[in-house]
Image (tube, rainbow over all chains, first blue to last red; front, side):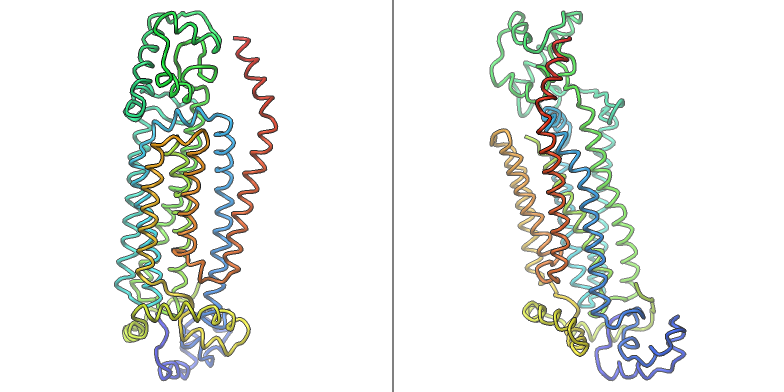
Length: 324
Length: 160
């Protein structure tokens, strides 16, 4: 409900008989019935003096919560940083399995939902009930779109055996992936040759990574930089590969990337789901016409939470999908 | 947060709508708000003043859409830049720089920190400061052990 727009209305409410205040549930604060500010602002809780005080207190509260959220995610970002600095090849290898287009689509969806959330705050402040509801619905729709895209991605990873830990059993080799072939066609061809060589001679004698290049030279022509560089970077050949005795194999720690991936995107997705729940609640409140110039805190605070979820994705997208 | 009282408020909503239309009004807020925020803390009288003009700054729509446009453009830029090789850490640095510009746009405009009480901005920046401390301390520590990791790897390879 919004503020009374004229002094007469405020006065009318202020002079309302005390029983109205008792209905309100403040029996032990009966004196509030004579307080024109509370009488005029039905959404002003009895422990606040003014709508401004209530709003500022709520705002401080939500910012404190967002602070803890940043620190909450900081743990995962720290794990990411340490792991990437230790095993850069794992991240190069694994990022070929992620679909940049879907990641970029989700980024755009979240950015648009951030706009509608910020717009909804404006609507609530100006008591534009209809536009407020439209903007909340669009925000919720964007959130569902985000989760649907995430579902498509997760389902794809599940089918391809790209799961954390023991369950990491990729069905496709990296050089069979379109994302790899498009960017490094020479390396993909060369990798196929190496893989065929391994198939023919599975009992090939163990060789240290240093010897590998020499061995390769015997069987097939010496690789060019373009052929070898992407494979080295992704830990497919050389000392960082899973099985240095083979000509080509995936990097040793590849499964950990998907642990990090699922934890980071999973926790973020969980926040999106919670956000949907809160937006639905706000939609119901908005439908009842609760919001106006003197009471829009809940919409503002929900939007702030929503922007933080967007903020985290802004960092997750390049860190997970755009590894060079 | 407060009690719900779904009574007939249609007329109020409509009158409020008339009070607050047009961007001129919103812009006027931007100039006035800092004073309103300070005053309302200092004196009880000023509360009424703050309430008259709304509790916080109202974002003008062109600004909101402009920020969205900038964010989408930066998203395209960060995807496009991956096709260029900028050295071992170059691409990561550029990607993080673009992400930080995007984050700043979201914080300053969408989260209206620019018009908010400065204390809220300080709070949020504190969390960012501790995030940076957390990451830099951990990476520095890890760097100290790099030679041990290298030695261990070399030993493992030698055994095979």
